[in-house]
Length: 414
Image (cartoon, rainbow, N blue to C red):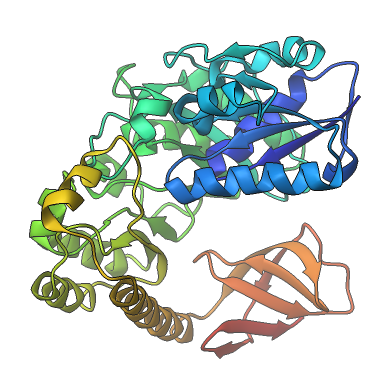
């Protein structure tokens, strides 16, 4: 059979999809989804829109190939898997803990088994198809209880992979030619708390391997402790941190059941910026309770933050969360107002990123692809650089001293 793996959502899912591929035996893994006999969907369920996107994808494939079989795994398996299975939208549902059983589902797709939410993957990923950098999952689950988020209920409580397993994997990846790794998970800042270890201790171990660049996935402000701060000057760390603020108004943070405080967040960001770091964040606009007065305070605070990268989105209902109940009492924000607020913080961040890029000197770029006449890759600040060259630069590290900074891009000739 021809099997296609469709991945939605986060970097953790990219890792999990590669793990699923490594278990598949006696069948062909194809890159042609329209002619696949079976599609294994590694799903995201972070918003209702993600669920809708999943259903639209299945309809799209069935319009081209009505005989395609579908196995659903990932986060949506736990949230809407039963309804999709009962309505025959998907043929089978495979819980995230059952990756090693994927061949059983391929032979008999009409299975429904959610497994459990206490699992830790034991097999490692040693290679990534079509990726220059490698993703390494270090933990699963989350112990936070943010009012808008369903993920803890579909990923389970925070639990860590043993450091020896992670180090073995990164050594294998290094031997296979990977020089950049991205540490990922549901909530990587919680790494180690259940095994008497820490993210900082893990990074120290990774630094001994010889990886050229280590990038951290999203981390919470309260998880950047003194032990981690002591590593900020180390050369192996990418000079970019993605720190999930979610908002910059104290009232909203309380409504969201967040653990961070806006004034402490600002102190942290200013400290990290003084270390030369580019700083990204997640931000939700138009959550229930975000009145005009609240937004005015939030945007005033936001302008003070040295933010260079932004993953912002308009609040989306997620059935089964406290925020849905809050909307019933506090009301919902008008869609046009929500879009205006989203565009406002995007524009602020765009200009901050432009000013940041103008201040830099040497850029160290890992070239990942050739597209539209340019070699493209990310520098140490996680900014995309487009490079004109007659040389073959794919999968190489280059140091760029002379380049042009524009508002929406950085270009160079090499």
